[in-house]
Length: 155
Image 1: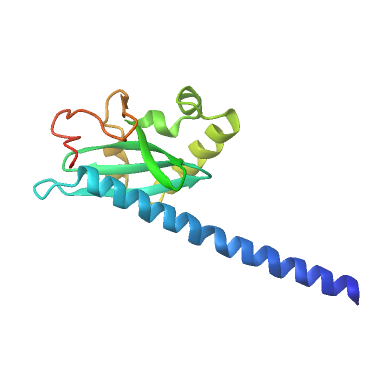
Image 2 (image 1 turned 180 degrees about the vertical axis):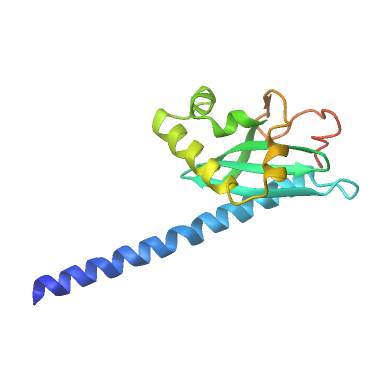
């Protein structure tokens, strides 16, 4: 009987941890959306941030603004999310993610998670993410110079 008690106790703890993880990831996704909206949203060009894929202290957020779109790579530093770079399809490719500093394991997990998250979106939205050409590195504060109407961050 004691074996069953331990087993069910272990199941209950495992279930509680599994339920807690999505809430934490949801809070991170909200913090990332807030950061990106505060940085790039403009009254004449509203920003949409979706999906936000979080893996440990790394995240990739898809964004669209008017006819433009792309993906942002973010890292959690201390308790805050910081924009690291913006790009297009490179942020759903494991090889590229490794070039941006992720380990092979992190890159593979993130690439799969991004592709899976984007599969729930309309193809027209995902196509916008591919329109971002190249890679724009952010400074230590998560900002980059304005480029083609995007990046006019608010101070």
